[in-house]
Image 1 (tube, one colour):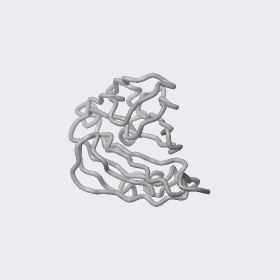
Image 2: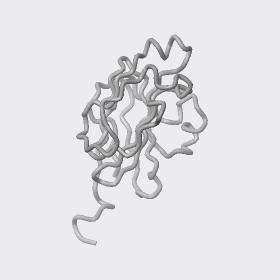
Image 3: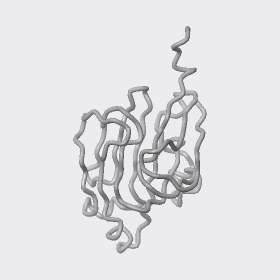
Length: 158
């Protein structure tokens, strides 16, 4: 296997938004909390500026703009799901700053969300990061919970 084996590689993930980081199991949505979309974490946002948590490529943008998929240069596939039941807002509070297949660096602005519009609709604005190929990676997620700034390291996969 050698020194450069992917199994030994530690992958850093930065917070996609400023706020309070919680384990994915505390998300008030059973699909995410039950890790059906993969392991990960969530952030209760203090602002609506969402940045890329990894360096890689934009692989998915939901028609309703509430979800973005990324594949990192290290092979991590993840979904950034913005809010719970925000699909019902039909894209209104979301301003997507990137295009499908665009290369992004960790920290690149992806989306601006009008958090007030989400809250006025009586919806939870929690930002969820689900690593959809977590099991295939064969790695452990080490998460730093609590308050964090966007772009700061929040988790490692090792």
